[in-house]
Structures are given as C-alpha cells and as structure tokens.
Length: 64
Length: 180
Image (cartoon, rainbow over all chains, first blue to last red; front, side, top):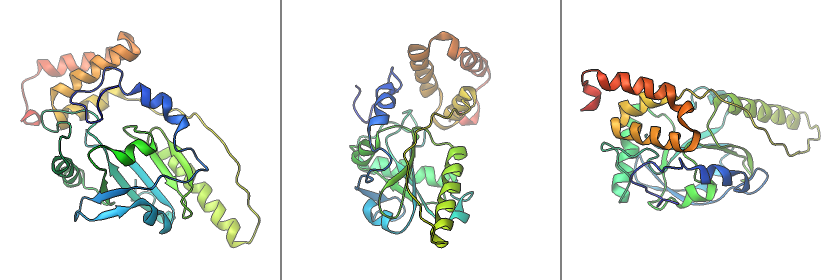
C-alpha cells in the first residue's frame, strides 16, 4: 500500500480502500470523532461538537 | 450541494484530505502549511460556500472514515451515522434528505418510528472523459497520464479507450493557458 500522501496516483487506484469500505464506520454506529482545522481562520473544529449542532453532511475530497 | 439542500436545515462541511491526483501544480502534501494552502486555493477557485475543514497531515480523520477520495457521510444530532456513500452522489443524498424530512414529520405528529437497517448498491454516471478533462485543467498532464495508467492496470484497455482517444487529441493541440 502506498504512503498516505503519495507523490503519484497509485497503480491500484486505491482499490484496497474501496474493498475495505463496507467494514468501516458503518451506519448505525457512532461517527468517529476527531479534530480538523478550519481553513478560514486556522481554528480547531472537533467533529463531536459539530454533530451536536444538528444533522451533519460531511463530504471528503481534495482539489484534484 | 450545500446550496441545493439548504432547505433541509442541515449543516454541510467539506473535509479536505490528501491530494488524490498529485500534480506539479498541487503535489502530494509534505507539510501542513502546504495542505492548508491547497485547501484555501480550492475554496477560492471553486467558490466554496460551506466550511472547509482540513485533516491533519497523516489523514487521521480520513482513515477513521474509510480513506476514500470522494465519500459522503450524514450524521444525526446524536452522533450516529445514518447514511454513507463510497462516492458522493447528490441523487442518493437527496433521497436521504427526503427520509430525514419524513422522520421529522413523524416525530412532530408524535408517531412512533423505528430504525431499520438497509444496504443499497446504486449506480452513478461515470464520465471518465469529463473527469480527465477537469483533472487536466486543474493539474496538467501528469495526473492524466497516471490516471490512465492506473485504470489500464485495474480495469484493462477497453475501459480506458475513450479517455485515451481524448487525451491523444488534446496532446496534439497547441498548448493553452491551462497548462501554465
């Protein structure tokens, strides 16, 4: 498996992660907590606090 | 997407992960400052209205959720995952919101509701040619070459035929400002 911040797109196109996805963070379970950085001002945002504000739609992605 | 669904009174956030298709313009991250800079460039260029939240350099949160490049979760106010998709698709998200609205209405009417588990394998439009066009505009030629090589490896030459035809045509054209 390539390092997380790979320098070139992996030859297996991340297929390992797609195969494993059904077994991770399933519906009906508690969503993972964690700390993220708000790109706007550099402040820390805890996901657990976000969830308590109401229904949260969380999209993951990157520029390219 | 956040604009389309704002009537549903939910909060939308985008979690910026690793660069899925590193390029000379937007290379893989080797420090958090670069990662933040890429995220801010994305906000500026794509006009993001929702909060852009950046994961740490090691992708700690991304790992916890499954590490896919374009996935979406919906989490209720109790912190429970009620929807997740390996690929962000507004069609199924719209369906999930219709369900959330139904549940809210039933609660308002004080009707008893009970969760049930379901799984689904919907299919999406997979316009690889459009994808590589956008990839080229954002990152130049290198990520296009790498994507075609990986798709050849995973799915075989037949699946990449149209992409290669477009890429050959594009490479035969004079350079444009998108490559600067």
